[in-house]
Image (cartoon, rainbow, N blue to C red; front, side, top):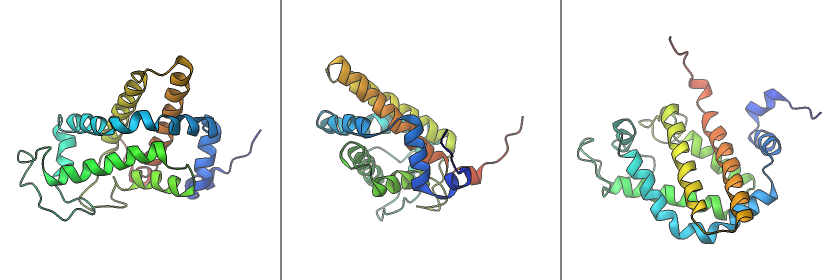
Amino acid sequence: MKHIDETRLESDLTYRFGFLTGFMGFGEAEITAIHGAASHLAPLVPALVDAVYEKLFSYDCTKRHFVPRQAGYEGDLPANLEALSQDHEIVQFRKQHLGRYLESLVTKPYDAKMVTYLDAVGRIHTLKAGSKELNIPLVQMNALMGFVSDALIGTILGLGLDDQTKAVTVRAFGKLLWLQNDLITRHYQANAQPVAG
């Protein structure tokens, strides 16, 4: 039986990631499968990004997060929610970030730098980093991750890969997205409020 220092899981990102990957069985085979999908997925990234933003814009609670200033964005802001279109400069700015994120998942090595990046993806959607005006509720982050997971799996299933490669690739991305989800939700723990009811 392997001993895990549970306190260290909350304070040491590398240790936490090591526990998660070991427990889930996310290793070289999964990384190879993810990187192996890069040439198939890279041309589809713009369509995936558009699908994500169509979904985000179909709910007022998720669309509203594109009205305030985003970290790193210096351009004009939309006057209000109704004035915000997918052609707006702030949305194009965010789409570029999502595209780079998806490309990073399939091209970058899964080293300490990547783990820090995946953790930052979670942190920037809270008050802990990024814009002080941007605080995405966890339920919306979970909904988004579920949508992205389904979109990626649907895309992989449609690539025409042989059955073995398809199965390995889908499972690898499933594990990766659970890793990402943990590195999102951990930043909400300190902000958690008891739910009445």
